[in-house]
Image 1 (cartoon, rainbow, N blue to C red):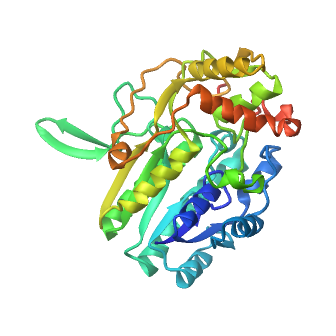
Image 2 (image 1 turned 120 degrees about the vertical axis):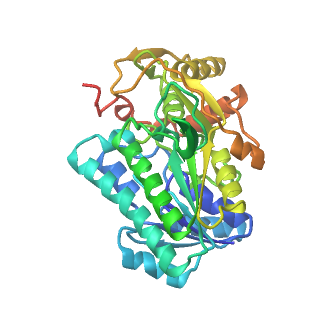
Length: 383
């Protein structure tokens, strides 16, 4: 297939480019390096040094012989977006090109405004580029489980059958996001559903839980191919933050009571899920929604796993609850359904002790680059 990847320089975007190229697909990646710039501006740089997208592509070609192409530009510019489609008419667009941090979206007005305008404008431009230039193209967009919040009922896969006063209808599952970033993802879903039912687009929306990990078959070829592994309080996902804290000798920062439960998945499983979505496209006028997770854990459970495994390899890990900087329930019901991708053939990589140890060993290789000042919460919205 001809695959256009938006946000190709990111933690997920770059491994996705390599994954599909290794499978023989024709891949064009697009990015404007805004994530790198934001990370520098907020002192939230990644742990491992990452060459820019053009340099990564050269390294990947030298090692594997596979070709990748990239373009650097702002996807909020609709004319740039259109030029991509005139040059490279895709069969599928994988949409990662959004500001992905809840804390960043609540850091201040400028950060909130950027999150809102960037995320919605890029999605809207994508819709119009497809309608104007590639109406048969399938959109695979990365949503987030955070759209649902933590309701006191089971979380279905995107849709809910409602019976009210003797009548029935299927609706999008009610959303109650806990940050501005997650709210933009809710608005994305609403935008895509409007255009899908109105103009017969083909859309798959993947409600992804927090991703952890640093290794894929392609990144293992050379450290210059590693993804942007963030461990800070703004862009670092929970497991990745805890891994670095364990290696650095910083007590694991459990926010509040630590009872917050989420659905997690390994980086390799994100690649599997995105590929399964691409290979099983939505039909015209269909919005497919999958809950993209493999396991659920509370913060306390994850801290206990990393302490146990860290201690077993001599790290002497401590756990230290701290006041929760976020406005969120700390003790709640959480039961998301996630059978859709499993039915398509997803083979999960579970968070075993061996996998946890391998991630810790990888982080240890870069221990001297850890900046402890990036770890503690710097954005507080639980006031």
